Length: 89
Image 1: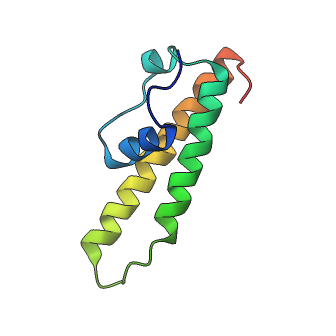
Image 2: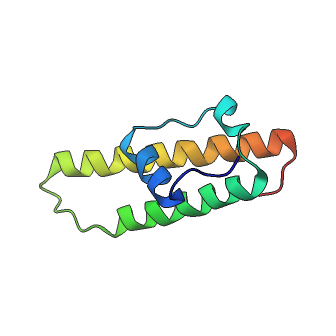
């Protein structure tokens, strides 16, 4: 199954918490699609890290860190799935 819509938008939805990647969901994607998702996760994470947030704005820092945490978790889930299934990334 191919990725419906923009892969970058999919990764932004993961960062915002609207979508959680699970193993049953990953079974729908081919290895090239998973590689595309991992690449776009890295792009979205880089964009989040580039944002200049003042240190006094604790809520904005917390929000950014939660988004980065969700992206990292999704990347770990994809890598573990591919390693277990012996799929190339």
